[in-house]
Length: 138
Image 1 (cartoon, one colour):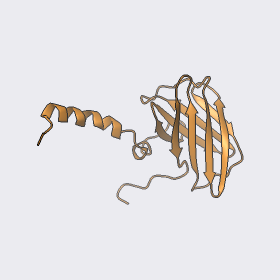
Image 2 (cartoon, helix red, strand yellow):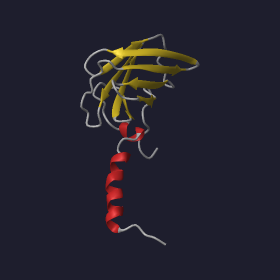
Image 3 (tube, helix red, strand yellow):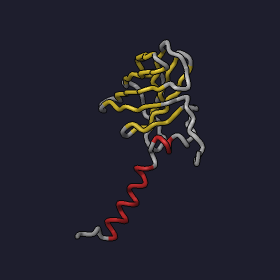
Image 4 (cartoon, one colour):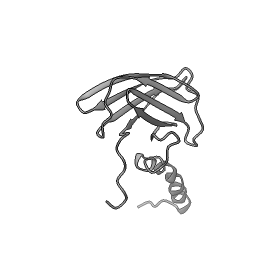
């Protein structure tokens, strides 16, 4: 039987901590800069902010640095109750993409965001923007 040597095991444990830091559960414990919900999508963080008839997605890197949205494109699929609405997202400022559509804000709402940053593959993230995480231990 082969065993991992101690230095290799130590490196695996150290570098695996970073991967755990960006789970949806972890991001739900973070305060988002614009009051939305955070999700990881490849090398980006997306912050989804929903308002009646409006969807905004702010794009940053993992360190929180704004990523220019110029020439980016995307869609947001809003699932609310039995309704499904596809909203086209377009650049609307430094690091934000915005779109408008007819949808209802509801606690069971789910949103699937797909964004193609310039020169990059499309990245996708899933949100439950109006659900709040349950307190730990409950």
